[in-house]
Image (cartoon, rainbow, N blue to C red; front, side, top):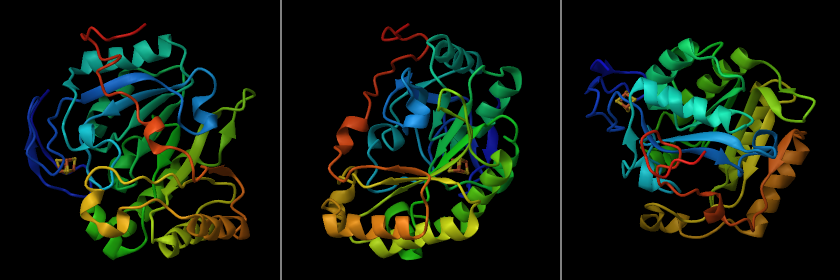
Length: 303
Ligand code: SF4
């Protein structure tokens, strides 16, 4: 894969990325780095179904949130650098396993690879773009027609919070434009006869302790700006992970009072399409083993 100066995410580092090394904020090379490619059963029910969502977990991240559950791969860099052919084989292998969709997890810094592979290989199942919301609309536009389901986070409205926890003071300004572009591309939600999502947008929001007001602002923006019927996935199972221990205000779980307040606002706004995670859900159970399962050339590959 040829080296290039990268400016495909809002960081616009213009860092050199060669086939095997990268110097930008995400530290990722040009070649896709994958930590796991396997059926995943902990996404929203319209994605996981009974056979699982075919999740490809990329290494690296353009956000580096201090509370990340997947620090091992998002910041630690664990994973295997693949060729385009190996990456395509990864996707084909998942489809052969009968997954309901191909779920590209944290794909932003590898959009150039995804675009190239999906231009040649049109999978028989929907493609899900599962991201942190910090995306450039112009990069998203290059994926139009290739992505069937967008699954972005909308993490914050508050600029101080996004600066402090994700080093991205412009997070909301950027993510809100990106999500509008996603909504424009995929239109309203389409479910199949099997009840699974074939096309559409699901906006995720993870409640943080002490940030109920910001969670409510997120929900209010969704209500005001996105088409009626947009799916919302409210996640309340926050557990301190990653570098969260350096932020005293993030060192606890969300309280029942905080949970109820945000949930009340969700229903009052009439955002009735979507999913709410129980506050008591254990965050750890949603984290798969990053052990190169399903990665071509690895012994752990499972058929
Ligand atoms: S994808 Fe990585 S290298 Fe490229 S602009 Fe974003 S952070 Fe920088």
